Image 1 (cartoon, rainbow, N blue to C red):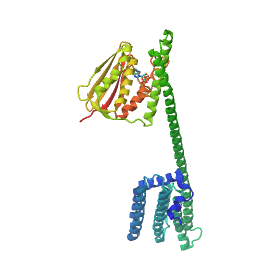
Image 2: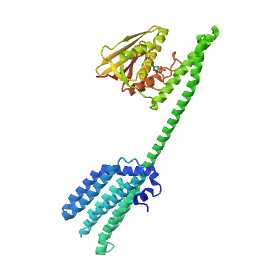
Image 3: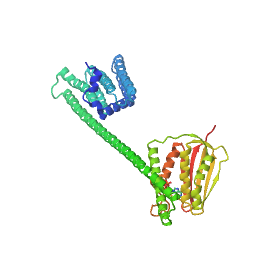
Image 4: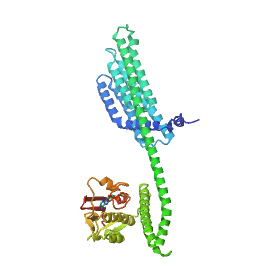
Length: 454
Ligand code: ADP
């Protein structure tokens, strides 16, 4: 025979539904949040009743209700982190919630009915009001699970009916007696409770459906993003491989190893090689971006000397700077300027900053690179006297595929990805990247890292 938990867990397939898991989680969360609020109301009700009812009886009922509340709290705390995966655990939780609800509703009803029985005159206003409060509380806070709500409300409903019939059976009054008026009032209140419970339950279900929709949309968006990333990675790879061989062949032709290249052909091959390099840069950037976003790039952090890093980067751009007739000067850090970083990735960042500074500079301008220690930080800045960047363009400067000037007016090439990649690399080093710039005067891009202290 299946044990009780498994039967609960496998009733229908409701445990496979996100909505039911969510209902249990919401119930547990609220049970935990509201435990002290409920304790306070019981405590106030008990103190009030102390003046009119036997203190021993009050104490007994209050202790029983408080104990059940604590059991509910313990259950909620134990399972707050439940991932909703295991249906057997779900069954266990539901069983405990059902038992606690039954016990709590019976104890509260018994106490209220007991109060009503002791009252022999002037109606049952207090017990009826207490029951009304308990029912509204249940409607408001137990609306996550219809079964649990119905269980609690049925017990309260029986208590209500008991109180309604109590004086009718006690006195068999004539129909114009206030006892019948109280009876019909209680029946009306019962209808009212059913109505508001249904409203709370339906609005909770609506909210649940909306959450499910948002979750599904989120899953769909994630899946689409995953497909897009894979597509991008595959296409970039497939483009990179033949491009490498095309570039190799062009270089071979250009070098003259295959024979003298006619003057007319040299120009055309030059254009092909230039555009080939642009395409290769774009593909490399795309591959880098995709890898960084997918978290596939492994950073190898080692102690680096900022002066050496800068020298290496400046050295590698000497050819490009020379071609543009731009002088690059470096001011080194005088102190110990070591920090933890991935050398090749940071060279990539420095190359990006330097090549931007060079390509946006005016002919025969100057680019100044500076390494300095600022307390616990190291700053590397690249300053140019070039075209500058307009105000409020930060999003475009660090955005993906975005460039500050529109492509039809720009004179220099680029993908609009370099600074976005650089930002992600710097941030993976717990560093920052920023710039100050004035249109027509120049720009200073700087990156900062934590200095090594030992
Ligand atoms: P790109 O490949 O277009 O250079 P980046 O991401 O490196 O892409 O730069 C984004 C944009 O930021 C550039 O297109 C340019 O408009 C602007 N920018 C970057 N560095 C400078 C600079 N030193 N001076 C002026 N504008 C710059």
